[in-house]
Length: 491
Image (cartoon, rainbow, N blue to C red; front, side, top):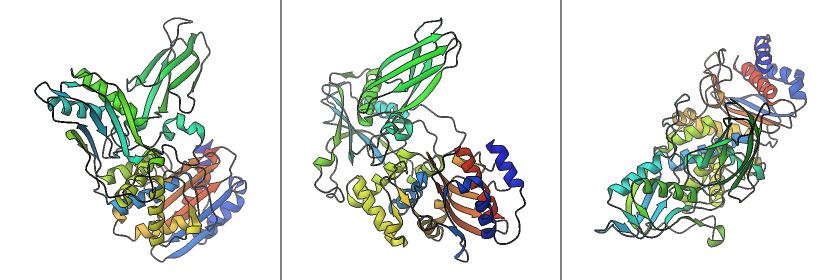
């Protein structure tokens, strides 16, 4: 229905006059627009002229359009070449017996300790999700470590342990899009659970974990049935038990769900312990995690000058340049990476990786940009929080500032391109608009957003923000209406 609706709207005559008049006429006539709350602002960047606006100074839930503010902050404050470091530290250099007392896996905020291909490529296959852990384990073994007499410790104290920002829903934490924030993040702090039917009717289902790390206790009550198909997965907040129930028919291809990992540092420690054991290293202790809790910090907005990590470095991984991760963050709308970017800025600028310090640095940055404090409020860096609010005026002001800055080329390269990549790869495909919209999408229940840049047929560049709230119909119809506005804006 949606594809047909979009094609119909694309085929409608554009009418005469300025883009603003055409957009206004469409919004006034559209049933979708009449049953939702729209905020729109479109600016000609060369002439600094407003072409159209509606409710532009009102506040809207922005969904993932909040990532525009986070990634702009990180790009400006840290620079495109900033890198993260992950270390394995021992209490001492291994002696003749190859033993150390303990090993500490210290996270430095690298969001790409995973099998993801870098640089970003839409069709690139995923690699081994534990590739970084395997590399670190191989380095430790190469240093001559043959035994660990105490524990393997996952240390994510580079960031304050505030895993879930204010305004996230309680069930967000179950799924990959709500994975907890940690300075030690493996495979985006997620694992995949695949449920496959048994060989015969009434057989229990088979459960496959990817990566194959034993972390959650699994209570599976899925049976193989003749025809029924329904799989349910649940995890109580703070629990390390997955409850899976339902039924799958014989020969069914199975069902895969991607879940969040509630303690990423502990998961990383378990994965490293397993990788070391496979290399013949004897480990007498357990895997455990250490966190920096808010109650242990006297000031969550500023910290003391950082001190060198104690211990002997036995392994290290340096990340790809920050620019590559910011591109991933915006193009695929990666919530965890946006949250980690906010904390990376706060740690680098204010010596503490906290939400409070990140918010303070964000506010200082937006003051410099000239965005009034009454035109936004952000409870997180990703836009998943239902407490975030921003006006189209504020979004477009940010877009104008970044377009006219020295970071323009890098900044625009972060955004999805219509009909080509990221979250816009399937939108406008095969139309005259493809390749001419560079914009960040946003989507939550009853919310859709699209903000960025548009190149008109005459070559003029526009900055625009379209924020829509309170729509109870199909989300696909709302996206189609937003896309029609983009067409009218470009012509």
